[in-house]
Length: 381
Image 1: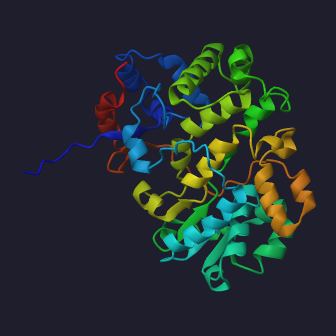
Image 2: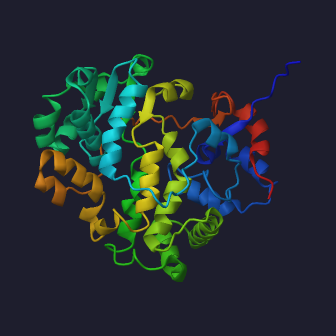
Image 3: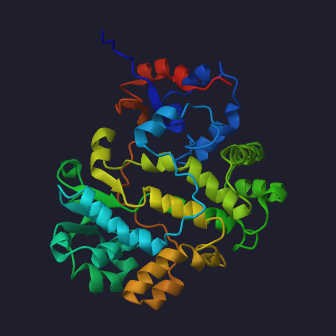
């Protein structure tokens, strides 16, 4: 006999929920034995807070199994014998993508930054002219200003080009695939932590002997002392539970982003469409097992290790991949991480929850349902 299973929450954006229904939410939270103050402080400062981890012991308050299953985002187990280079993976990615997503034309949002340029380089190197004819690069003036030589030498001769803001809309979903550079930043760590370390001076130090320094890095991001200590302790216990060989300060911060930030990054839907349609159309170029395996292998001191001497070296490996193609030494040596122009900047923070059937819930229209389901989404501690 068939039974109707009541849907459950898979994901909650606590900061957004508190903004719209703070008193009612806090009344629920206080019934659970969790240190909510630093978690809420963290959520209020980080706009895309890492509410969920995807491996190791779940030390955060919300259950994570359903959102991990929904997004299929368990990271691969580290393979000691893994030998593929960034170039190997990036070249193969074009072949894999054209085999998987050949039933619709593609849009490639190009910001002029490194991550989207790697995508374009791979496509030009590895696809046929007939396949490139089915791809449109979307950009704007800021994209061209950031990488003008690349635009005129390699994009215009090889692709149809359209202004991003005149093309991407709800009607695009279902007619095209949108293939972008997320979640590339999580493969390399984040420059914010590296800048906090002081031009990389401290990144090689063993993190277990740098408790005060790590807490001061969190304080430098605007967190209270209590929240900074909580973040350090969460990071320490999670590393021990995940059984990963994290030894340096850099690796501590990288692992926190890689393990706890992936889900929030995947859910960064700024296109104003339902998540069910979003994930049928929007494909993250770097969201695959090989790139993650490469990051897991190389953030422990191998291929990427030589590129951590100063801020210009951030993302040195993708810079080399691009340079091997266009031989632009200025870009190789002097291009730095900047805030790329956000194409999908229409995030709707009213959509604060996702059910395990991929329905999304709005803080205005669905608040009663969210509050009803929230207690079952909190772990028993």
